[in-house]
Amino acid sequence: MGNSEIDINDDQRWGGYVPWFLRHEGFAGKGDFLRFFDRLSHRMYQLFTFNEVGIPNLLHFGHILESKSLQKFKCPRDIGENIAKPITEYFSSCTLRKEMEINLLKDPEVVKLKNKVRDFEKSFGGKGIYTGLSRENNIKEIQEIWKKKGQSVETLMLSREEKYYRPLFIERLGVLEVLLQELPKNSDKFLDLVQDTRRYFAESNIMLEIETDSFKIRILEEPLLQREVIDKLIPRLESRFPERAKELMAAYHDMIGGKNRNMSMEIRHYLK
Picture 1 (tube, rainbow, N blue to C red):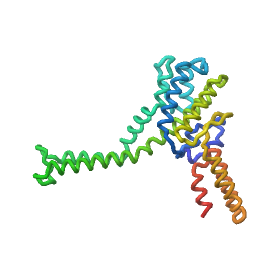
Picture 2 (cartoon, rainbow, N blue to C red):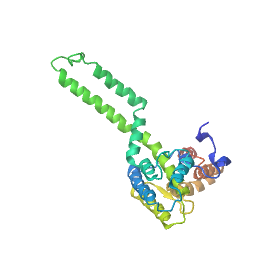
Picture 3 (tube, rainbow, N blue to C red):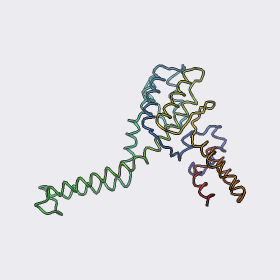
Picture 4 (spheres, rainbow, N blue to C red):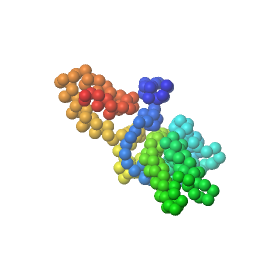
């Protein structure tokens, strides 16, 4: 049974805290995430290199982060006290790019198209003559076909990048929230980290916010949905379809609680 089939907020085994990447596994927010994670990566280097918030045992904290993030972040076993390096690398856009490319190259459609290009290359004879083309126009035509095939592979890969970046972004947002939960909070440096992260969200046009009491990451569209859809739609629905209005409000509160990941589909259903 997948996570989407489980009402995770009602499962007491979570102990009151469900990681962000499970609460919002369908997150589709826009923005410059690579810029955001580059900013955050450097901020993590600063935080842990100078131990700004006074973590008693840095290596222990690295392993706490691995445990609490359900091993989304992996703490190397042979790093000593230098946890700045693996945490910095984990959030960097270079690491994101490498992980995305590894997954992209396994995409069935990409593999299929690259195999077609490889078959084309194998169609050359021993003297570089492609049997399907006239001898006199051989080189020119080959170059043109080769160029088009190469471009088609590039175009396909570019169109699929978002698909393989998105889970990596969601995973790291979840690890960031776990990190904020676990860091010591008795220092102005912690609040400075929170404010810097909020600034990075704003600079990167990412509609996320950090709550100042729980230090959880919140999607900013939720108040907008409340104001523009729920507040305006519910009175209309209640006057004509009171049962539907109740169902929609229940779906909305489930979404806020992380239970309903398909709120937009629910709204379209009730507007029919």
